[in-house]
Amino acid sequence: MSTWMVIVGIWAMFAVCVVLFIRGATSRVAHAGEKASEIPDTPHPAGDKVTPGGV
Image: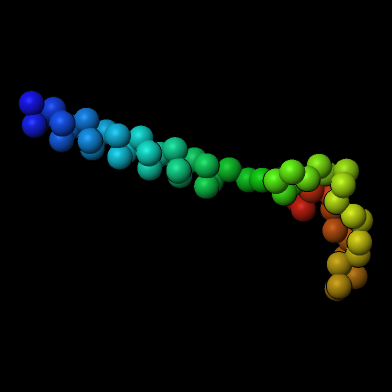
């Protein structure tokens, strides 16, 4: 029984790590709760235009 618990525990930790890795690897276009149309079109301090959505 304890062997199965170790195997299940290792698989559970692996699954959690995969989920956290995939969530961290995804790109976010807009900030949470912010639509791309709500981002102001202000010029960058260097003179470059900032594209909507931060891309």
